[in-house]
Image (tube, rainbow, N blue to C red; front, side, top):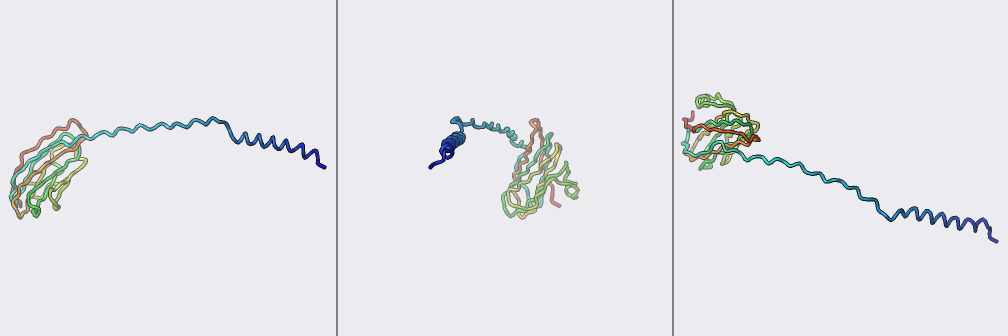
Length: 175
């Protein structure tokens, strides 16, 4: 014989199971996705192309020094490029930290922002953080060949009002 208590609890268990099953299903509508705004990239300013300060070409006999001054009213990175004909020539290049005369250079009394005493051709060197002012470039040919030289000096500056001047190149004997 069956107990009425058992029969009475069976429908109650079925009802509880159905209620739990419906609660677990949740609603048919999905939660809206969280919209994350795409950050707009900050434009990076395009740097102005370097300003040509001076360029030229000339013969540079062995045991001679070519020098010229360069002046700018803007700060930036100064780059000096010197090319020459013979790869085995000993070409040396200096950029002073201020205007320097050939006499001071000959007596080793100039200070330098950058110098290149060896390396392959063309010789390229640069100095960054250079203040506005007048600087001297010296190019020495320690031989063994007389050379045909080309040179170029540029300034990369953030200032749009950069003005530049260059002095005439001059040759002096190598000490």
